[in-house]
Length: 479
Image 1 (cartoon, rainbow, N blue to C red):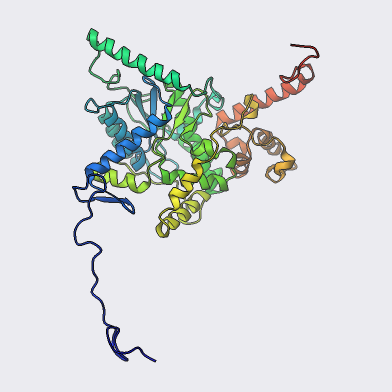
Image 2 (image 1 turned 45 degrees about the vertical axis):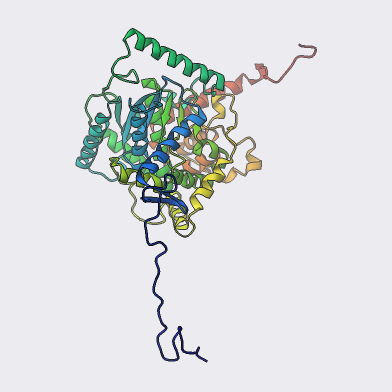
């Protein structure tokens, strides 16, 4: 039976449409000041006007640095810029934090670096030159020292980049306070003597890029060698891991050679959540706290910090749009297929798809990662660290961890011997990636050199093992 005629309409009649009443007939007010109209709604119930949103964004960055107390006053910090939204917003926060108009200025000494990856991203020489020119102009406007590098330069790195540097232990809180007091006292003395200078950070306003004072592309031979390395990789997942490895090694080498003790990267909360699940799928569960945490101290003398990890991609996009932060977008790693080409992109599409229907997906994954232990596994020697990622080897018992399927089983040929020689030097995840990287002779020279050195040291240690005293051994009756 049909419903009775009325407000719902009778039989054969179209239902009467109710007039859509807007949720609010006036603009939503800002939740912080209550005066201005809201310009952006970050989350449900969090609507900000432009000025309050800017204060919220700046406070978040300063609070992240102040809460962790990792960067000491006067310390040299290298900002890794890709030209994307997150790293560009990070640069703007540092610029504003160092300006004289800021009430509580940042006290570290910044430097900038941009790595050109156009060779493996399908860009032509003309496109790479245009990108480098635009990026150099953007870096020059900041007045900070900057360095321009290309991914091809990673092929010429020394083997020492794969060794842990001295130090790496975080300083206690009293030492940080003493450093702050000493820095403030030094500034007062300089101001009293009139030697404060024009730069608030004590820096010269210009420094040439690494190796040359002009942005230039590498030689064609280096580019061909790099392309041959990436073409040898069998899957796009292996190429993504290879790109991240070369990029991190080049950043580390630049920081060491130029005297920087900290490196800032621009991973956002969205990127950290994607990276967390991606690394789980890649077998890096033991290193999630190091790969996604605020502090990454695996390198010892150079610490990687991620001050943008508390911002969502939405917050960063609105901030850059409202306040005119310039960005230079470069294409991703070149792939023949657009969908389902790598674990990284599959996980990104999966999380972003869930985020559309369930807005708390990214934050839930991110907060779950916050609960992970930040203490990495200890490694007493370089032979106990992975050759590629420099994390402690998670292969204490190969039988218990069922790592036999990851070992490369080739019966004959010199390639089998050289490939098998790499396996004991790698962690579980890097073994999986190494299987898809192609022949070992296509690996960068510095990786092969360091692998040979470690194998020689391991063989030497095995030969003199019976003459060595273990650290945990104690003589009877000894004190």
